[in-house]
Length: 254
Image (cartoon, rainbow, N blue to C red; front, side, top):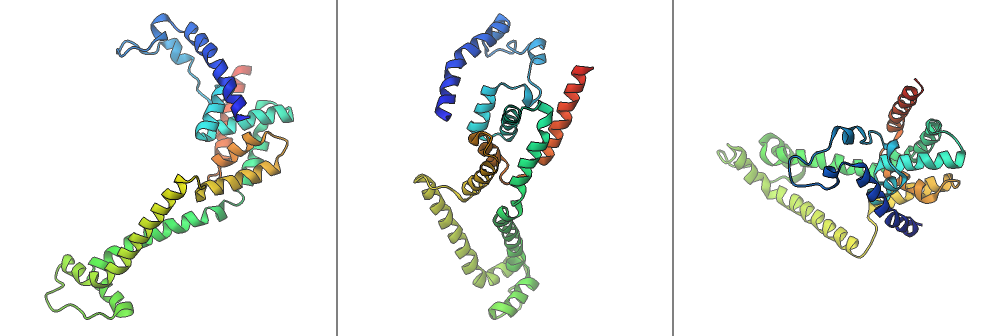
């Protein structure tokens, strides 16, 4: 399906470019490296101001090429219109329903990332006083190390404190740093042989869950949307989009 769609875009691209060039003034058809080659007022007025104004081909490129979340949402919105036979503004409830399903296990799938963030913040900030602050280093020494305290005058500055505490702080900090370096190297080699990273596996799991729950819609469109919001809620964006859509429709009717 992806191959057929790309082939269709390749066939349409020359004609689309030709139509666009025909609509522009002659001076704007080619961009020169001059400060005079700038958009006209008409060009600025014709610029899309909302994702709903983009063509299906451009949405496909944005959604499949970069996983652009608004593009995947808009493409799914149009799929819902076709399958459910509803108007554009009436797709909100189904979008919210599908978004809620993806977000239902966010607390679980985000737990490893949140654990890593908290551990890194605590470990990073705690290492500073444990190395350079005498009271903290001395307390840690009394509880876990039992190293001889520094002689009088050997811990008068924070650098002298660090030289003393480094006797026991160097092994754990050095080992942790080397461990993370090895894990990073292993990850790079896994990527080199085509292994799927942890985050991509999470996104694939979210995509499979949503596609199985809504088999009536195109699986590629549903999966692309689920992957784009696999770790981020989309409900607020849907509500914000709905306000814009209703305002635009109201302006047209007025």
